[in-house]
Every structure is written in structure tokens, then in C-alpha cells.
Image (tube, rainbow, N blue to C red; front, side):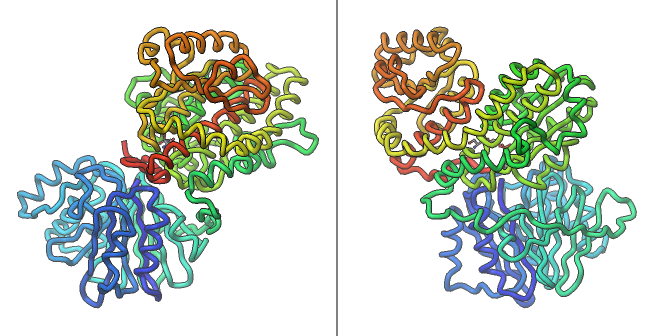
Length: 616
Ligand code: M6R
């Protein structure tokens, strides 16, 4: 949510900053800005809209400078416009600051600063930081790095920030709490990013700042980091590590959009998420990252799964996997609700947090609650080195590769793959699964990438169905059992990228209300694959047809009954019931994608959204 890039070194800063912003645009894209240190002053340009608009505006203008900061915004406080766009600059023009996160006590600080005579140009919480730092400098007569540390000690909330200041044109100050920030170095060139995307082209030698860290980057000097929580503000030794990201992973690789590329990467994402976790003889599943806590998991009284959005849907699939295979009760919670309840958590509970980005604020807050109550806290996430990976006691990465499209696709199938491996490994050790069922499920899981590929071959057929759905204002998605989360996920994909109103329901629930919505204009997308409740789903379909609803079905290859009742039918390869979501979710992703393209929507950057929701 919002993207930060900053540079200080021997090269021209502007191209590095603007290209960096393009790579970060998936994090927020309603306005963008850049500030460059030029001789003894700061030159700043801001624009409402996309990074391209900022770049066009800057073309022909003075973009000299070898130090600068830049930001792409996802609005929280104040609408997207140039005043609210970052950087925010001090009244005397001497300092510019960019910020990700939220300053929660900004209103009281603002009141105090207005009393001191400061005036505000924007509605943002960020501008408070600029004036607060200046106010401290005036009152305390301290150098800027000290003033920044003092200001940050007064602030409640989260931040990743970068500051440029005329009092030392050869210096950048950066800080982090709750929002990620990393610094890369290539000799004496320093690159700062809110993730690795803007940095990886130049270096893989990076340090991830920790909460409370304030870094001072000086031209030609070694990086200095201090922490505001250390009373003595002693220098820390920066621990540089390899950035696990490659440039190719960030490119579209011949696809029109990241989302389509990521949908087609799913066979590989599933293989990569299984790699090294099933032995050569294919009879042992083990997840290295959780071994230390496996006994706690086996003895768990209950699993509590916390997540948001698509990751929450993966959690709902996991409920079926864990309860069926491991026979331990599971509760799946929206992290945003869980954090504000007074949940009953015991020390023998295991909390599993699922997140693609590993930066979702609500999920991280739920993790803290789990830890506070003494539960074992396990993470499943895709971004290596993310906050979730660092804040959980143990966990497993999904290895789906970077997911740039705002709509999550390959992260979902990779999460379900890892959760399946986790359930299998625990079930075998707990003895809640027979040897033959265990081996069969391992074989079935290994066949999933091929099955996904077979679904992907049906893209043109799904495109034709999309022509029909794209003309409708609403859509309903139905599924039962392990396919109910697939219905929810199908509806979420469609609504978030095509702006068609869509809802997912358990198929049997519609007669308790939603069936009132069914008429000739309502496409009802039903997942009716071979499963225990297949006959029941057939009855639900009949109820819809009786109300003149249009059925679009996802069935198992060779199905005749549901196919006959459907206006359109997508056949997927026969799959073990528990693993069906891994295959059945794919045609729904393609359907949403093509509906959105037909409706001329910006598929990778849907309106009002951002990739990583690092604010509440
Ligand atoms: O990074 P996370 O998995 O924690 O993100 C959770 C949700 O914000 C995310 O899944 C969101 O719902 C996607 N836009 C869905 O496509």
C-alpha cells in the first residue's frame, strides 16, 4: 500500500526513481511524486494519477540530481490529488518526506502544530511528520537525524519513510515501523525501496530495516542505523543479505497483463511450492520450516486460521483439509474481525496466519494477539523476508514468485498446495490417515499442475463465456463443501477486477434468501464437480432453472447431467475432492479476467485497490 523508492549515489536519480515507481505502482496508483536534491534546493514534482502522467509532466523539466525520493500513493487520509500526493515538503522548502503507513495520533499532533503556527497544505497524516520534525529542530536545536528520532518517538502508528534535506544534500534519512523498508547497496550507491522491486535491477545486497530503525545514508560513507527504542541510540551493525528476487520475475514475459501471466504461472507455482517437500520415493511429506513446532501442531487443541481476502478463502479450504485429514478442529477467522474481538485463545491452540504479501496489517495484528496469548503462531506467506515471515515462530513459504496483479491468483493455489502438504504431513504423523490414502493424496497432489495446464488450454472457450457474463450487472457463484470457498473466490475475482456485483454462497443456502435474486438476467456459476454432495448440487441447480436463472457450470470431465442443464459448461479433469479447489478456481480466474478485459477495465490495477493492504 503506497510505494517508496529513494536513491543516493553517483548516477542520475530521476530515471532510477521513475522506473522504481513503475515497478511499485501495483502497491498504490492514485497519485505520484518525486523530489530531487539539486545544488542547494529541493525540486519537487507531483501529479494525480499514474506514474506515466508524472513522467510525462516531468519530461522537459529539470530533473537533475543524484539524490532523490519518490512515492506512489494509495489514498488513506485525503482524496487523491496533488496536495495530498507525496513528497510533503517543509514550509521553508528545506526538507521533503515520503511515507507509507498511518500516523494514528496525527489529529492531536496537528492541533498542537497549528497552535505553534504551522500551516497545512494537505489533508494527510504525513504532513504532520514534516512539521513535527521541523518543530523539534527549532525547539531543541538538534541535527536532523536526532530530530527525526525524537519525532518518531512521539508518533503512534506505522511508517516507512525517506527524507531529503537541504542542510545536508548528500544525505538520505530513512525509518521504519510496521511498514517494510529495505536498503540496497552497490558500492557507494544506495537504493531504498518499500519492497525489492525497484532495487533488484541494481543490487541484491540488501538490509531490511527493523521496527524502530532509523538509517542515515551519507554519500561515500557506510550506512548508519540506530533504533529509537534503544535509549542510548547506539549504532547497529547493518546485516546485509541476498535479495531473493530476480528481474525476470518482475516482467510480464510476453503476456498483456501481470494477472494473465500469473494465472498461467500456476502449474509452476504449485510445483515450486511442493519442491523439496515430497521425498524422491514420494512417500514422505515434510515442511522444513515447521519441524521445530510440529509436535505442538500435532498436540494442538485447535487451529485458528487468520487471513484476509483470497488468503482467507485459502484458509476456508484448509479447514476441510485439516479437519478431514488431521481431525483437529479448525476455526477460520477474518483477521480484521478477530483482532477486535476478545477471542478465547489458549496455549495449546495453533494460530496459522496466511498472507501472500506478509504485510497485511490486520493479519499481522492477529498474529500479535496469538503470540500475546501464548499460542503457537505459524505463518504461510509468499514474500520472503516479509514482516509475517519475521514475526511468526515458524512457517512455510509458498514459492509462487512475485505476484504483481492486484487480484491474487497463483498465490491462492500455492497457499492451498502448502496447506495440503502441511495437513498431509501432520495427518501421517498423527495416524489419522491410512498409508494408502496418504500415498494416494501425494500422487493426486503431484498431478495437479498438469490438470491446471489442461484447464488453461480452455482459455478461448472461457473467453466466449465471458462475452455473455460481461453484459450482466450481477452474478452469483455457488459451491458446496470444499468448493464453497471456490465460489467465494470466483465472486471476489469477478467483482474486484470487472466491477460486476458478484456474491458467493453455499449452494444449499440460496433458498434461504439469495434465490430471490434469480431471474433471466442472473448468471449463476455453479461448481458442480464430482463430490459427496453432487446430487444435492444438481437439485440446487434445478431450483435455479425453475426460476429461469442461467447456469454456467464447472463440472468434472465426462459429466452429462449438469452439462445438459447449463447454458455454458467448463469441464475440469477428475480430481480428488479435497484437492478440487486447486483446479476449479482456475477457470473462474480466467472468467473474471476476460470479463474485465471485455469491459475495458484495468485488470492489474483495479480501481480503489492496492496489492498489499498494510493499513487497517
Ligand atoms: O497479501 P495478503 O494475502 O495478506 O492479502 C490479502 C488480501 O488483501 C488479498 O487477498 C485481496 O483480497 C486480493 N486483492 C484478492 O484478489
